[in-house]
Every structure is written in structure tokens, then in C-alpha cells.
Image 1 (cartoon, rainbow, N blue to C red):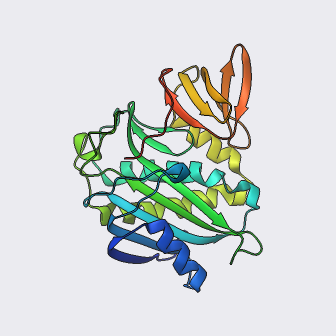
Image 2 (image 1 turned 45 degrees about the horizontal axis):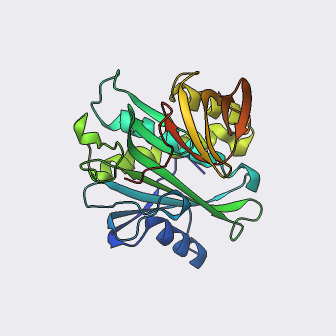
Length: 257
């Protein structure tokens, strides 16, 4: 994707899901890449089909583009998207340099321990030969966040002068293609891996992973060369490809906010 190209952006007042809109328009033959941004969503989605609370004033946007990478590299897009969103926040706000803005594997934006945003990546082989059609959705609590989820969440306005969703998207639409160019369809994932780890928690941080085999408690050991999570469990480093992560050894579940 050409980082210097002027992005195509479709603004919608209300929709069910920007990811669903981006996928539908891409499969209909719209010119790509295409960003879709909505004022609010009525059926926003997080990972694993969870709902995403979507009041007006926050960022709900998705990009559809044809990716030339092998399909097995599609999971790395969550990490690229996380870096891009974090950098867009930094570039478009007066957030203090020592603010605890960070990433959590595989797709969360945190402020300290509180979730502030998330990523949803979907892909299909349609329109993507060679490669695949990628839909990357971004949700970020800019002006508000729910307070009844039973988990710690926050919004950017609690920590800085929050930009409008449109202003944040303008920054994101610059950052995401730039990091895709650095990635080079997976040929230089090592650079993305280093950048992601620099923006994540410290090595040795306690965490619990809700995996398909049940909860796994251990300590964070970085990312594998594929982008999988590395966790030290009972003295052995394990590679984890799927699961929800909670920090500090708390019960692990992925909040949608």
C-alpha cells in the first residue's frame, strides 16, 4: 500500500459495523485501499465475536486493502495495527511522554492497566490473488468509555486533550501504510517485532492467558519470530498463538470497550 497516496475515506453517521461495511464494499469491487469511519456503531465487534460498545464521540474505523503477503502472515497485521494506532495517538495529542500508553498482545491499546482501544483483523482470499483481502478495524475510546463492564477501561480524554475521530483517523491513515511498508509483507517482520516489544510491557511481567486448554499463568518473554506470544510457564518458555491475556496474574478475559 502506497504510504504517500491520499487515502479514500467513507464517512457514515451510523452503521452496524465498520468492518462489515469495509468487507462488503471491497467485495463489491470498490477501489482499494478504502477507509470507513462511523459516528457510532450499532453492532460493533471485538475479538471472538464479542460486542464492542460504540457511543458517539469515539473512533470506529476500518480499512480494506489487498495485501500481497502470504495468508499465514495475516495475524501479524494486528501487531502492525497496534503500533500504528499508538503512534497516531502520540502524533495527534498532547499526551505526556511518560504517560503509560502501551500495547498488550495481541490487539489491545492500554493506558497503564486500563484498556483504551482494540484491533479486529479479518481476511479472505477473495480479491487477494496473490495474497488476500484484509480488513483491519480500529476502535479507540476518545471521549468516553463504559463503566459497567466489570474490568478496567479508560478513554483518552482522561489523560489528554482528545482529538476528534476524524483528526485521529487522519494521523492513523498516515501511520498504518508507513508501518505496512516497514513490514514488507512479512519480509521484515523483525523490525515490526522490535517496535511492538518497545511499546509493550517489560520482560518478566506477570500475566495469565486464557487459552483453549484453560488458564495459563506465567511471565511475559516477548514475541516469537512469527508474532506469537512467548510466556515462561513453570520454567519453560511456551509459544502461544491464541488466547486472551490479563496482566498481573488476574483472570484473563478480553474486555470490549
